[in-house]
Amino acid sequence: MQTIDQIEKRRREIRYINYFLIYLLAMSIFGIFFFIDVINGFFGALEYNIMLRLYFISFVAAVILYLAQKEKQQRVLARKLLTDMEKTSQDLAKEVRNKEFLSTISFLISNLRDNTVLEKLFNVTRQFFQADGGAVILRNEHRKWSDPLVTFPENVDPVLIDDITKLISKTGRSFIQPEPGTESHQPIKGAKNLIAVPLRLEGRLWGVITVWFDSTVTLGKSELEVLEIIACEASNSALTIEISRERNELLHGLLELISKAVDAQGGAKNRSMRIAEQAKALAQEMDLPKATVEAVEMAARLKNVHHIVGNGKKNGNASGASAKILKSLNFPSRVTQILAANGNSKRSVSVGSSVVTLAEAYVNLAYPSRGRARATSSIIAKLETDSHDEQVLEALKQLIIKPKTDSSIPIPLRG
Image (cartoon, one colour):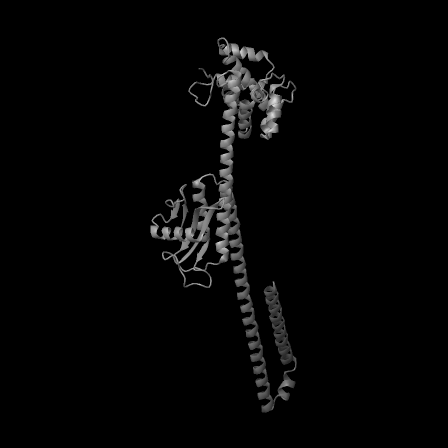
């Protein structure tokens, strides 16, 4: 802003000088035209004539030099202004690039489900640094370094990868080559400039991400910190996903165990599983959200958990009793809410609990514990006489009449 003000000031000065010169020229012409005789008499002497000419030449030269100096100053200021504008544009472009990079990195880290996403994360990072090469190397369950997960270019010298993994294993910390102030020390011989950051999972070294440059570039702490942040966030995301995966496996195993225990208590083989499969198929047929489908399947499996916790005592509202038990065990609220509403005759019964209710009714009729199973038409006719949700009942009819070639439909389950 100060440079722009200076240029404007110089422009005004030059404009005022131009006005003065025009005024001086006009007055000279005016004087010569009206006072030509007086001037000829006054400057008739030779010495005055010469003095006037020298004075006029000196004045014109001084004005020209002054204008040239002002034009030079303006040119310098204009060049400085253009330089500042170019620098500002570069800074803005860099800021936009950084924002786009962080947005992409955040998305990839939040969806770090497998090694494919980790490869994408590496490629985006390498392009951001404009590095000539790089790699991601992970350790196996035996804490041995595996072959690189991804490298760029593909024909990377294995000695370079081996040197990096050895140094990371030995030091256990990030490093930058050459380190600021110690340009002569280069532990990795295969790359002139290099950044390597370890990936840690619960404090355990499980990989390394590295980028290198063939040409001489200036690497500082800021580049190292950026890569360390990426590695840290990726490790945290991987740890969260690992914990979530273990939790889901534990939960599914627990559900399977509870289902078998409930069926063993009730004397019906695979009954809970059949109800759960039927409820899941109904929910999918109704295009319910994935979270609702999972909650419905889980609620169907746990609907009769009170049989084993409550010593098999009968209860007028079995689902409500199971909901109380599961709620005390901190099961997901969406599951306990479905069970709490299940069996309630009010209009406020949720779609999820209606699905579970109809699925159980269908399984009871299709797979009775005693006697022969009814025909499909007889089952539908019986269900239509009961107070089931019309939308859910219609979905069941559509599910039954679907072609048998559709392997995603578990109906009918025989045997």
